[in-house]
Image (tube, rainbow, N blue to C red; front, side, top):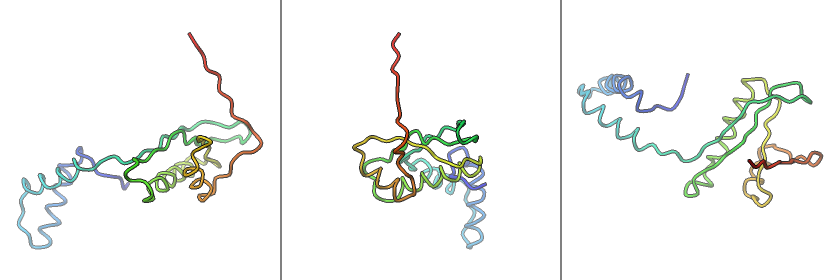
Length: 136
């Protein structure tokens, strides 16, 4: 499994990193290498997220993925992050056998709508979405 390293991986990663540097004829130095990697991992900043829910569709007789929320830091936009997040959502959908990814977006969110269209999403012109706000 390939995934992004976290601080929880620091000890194991340090051993590998030290072995890597020894391979390149650098001296072994666990403490220095651990500090170096710790700085790299601590400086990793979250720049966006996608929140997916797996549910079921009676009409499709299948599981479906709802891409409920997607957001990218405004300072990082236009660099492909949203596209990457959607690609990861597509991988999830394929893994669970979902034939569809469903999402909703604001009517005035033209930038997002443009990306969705470019990535193959089709706006539903046949079904309306409704919400019922409940009060206590």
